[in-house]
Amino acid sequence: MPLIKYEEVEKIIESLKLPTLKTKSLSVPDSVNMILAEDVLSQNDIPPQNVAAQDGYAVNVHEGESYEIVNANKLNKGQATYVMTGMRVPDDANSIVRIEEAKVVGNRLYPAREPKLWRDIERAGEDIRAGEVLLRKGSFISPYHVPLLIAAGIKSVKVFDMCAGVVSIGDELVPYDHDGGVRDAIAPMIMNLMPFAEKKYRLIGDDLEKIKQTLNELSKDCDLIFTVGGSSVGKKDFTKRAISDAGQLLYEGVQTNVIKRGGLGLVNGKPVIALPGRIVSAATVFNAEGLHVISKMIGVELRKYKEVELGEDVEVKHSMNATFLFKLDGSTAYPLRWGTGLYSELAKADAFGYLERNREHKKGEMITVQLFWKGCPNIY
Image 1 (cartoon, one colour):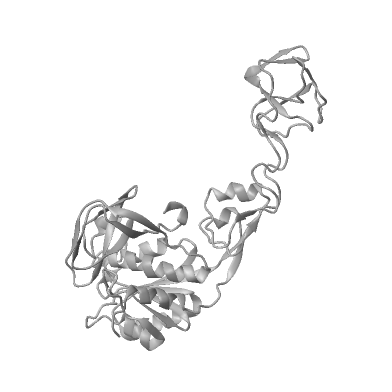
Image 2: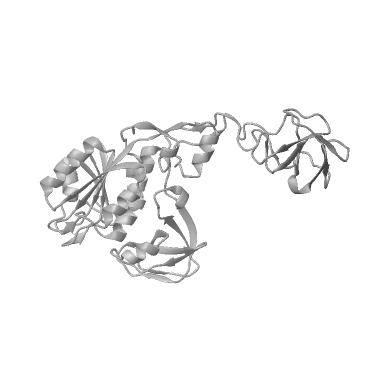
């Protein structure tokens, strides 16, 4: 199967007919980093009633120089009552005299300056109205959404119940916390990029039958599978053959360096994204192709792009278009060292992009880059 252009990859992923994801309900505090499966509407106004934004005296503004201090739930013209920040103000109160501007003599309040209508009062529904959409389907719930949802009367939300298999393949590999071999450093990265999914992890050797068996087993429980390693064309690179034997290999690779050996197939109708076993290649294929598959599954585009200008000249001497990592400074992209196995460069990178082969790209040239996904759109 020949390598195809990246534009063809995009079309293949867009044409996929994938199984419908299950959903589940979670309490608002437990839903952080999950993906919403439906729109969430406010159940009440925020604030639900007029509240004081400052400590002081709530007043019903009139033209006199002083106010009668009362203890009442409703104020007449010229009356005032003491309130603290966040408290509901009495009915017909329409301004706050801040405590530092209040002079009290007996039961009379003398403001240091004339009260202005609605000063320091947060009016009912000023922030959110009942029935207003708070978050759309496909949104990620961040810690900053939790107080909004609770204040809006939301106790639980419906989220996608996604399961992702992650299979590291290689005789040389040992678990990330073991010695005596090459530590599996890539799978933990992939799993942490999907905080919204349950993960099922496997570490297996270069064994065709074992790979096929693992893919079949995981495809019964998982919604998608990522394999790491064994995706090239060496004698012990069995991953894509295993995908083909167990299901269908949709494409074997891409005509672009670094992401060249990424592939995609289906096993029992579930997408299997083959990531190369080199760190930069695995990260960029996950972002370019894996994130596209996940976006297709939830119905919301998760990938983000940015138009930037090159911060320095870059000469591409490769035989095909090449993927470069970039460090961004505002709208300027500075290329990092090129290579598929540079852990240190990936740790610095903010984005990646594709540069045309056999030409020198000049400083100031405008290019499009894809921002590296950090696990949640709020921290892109």
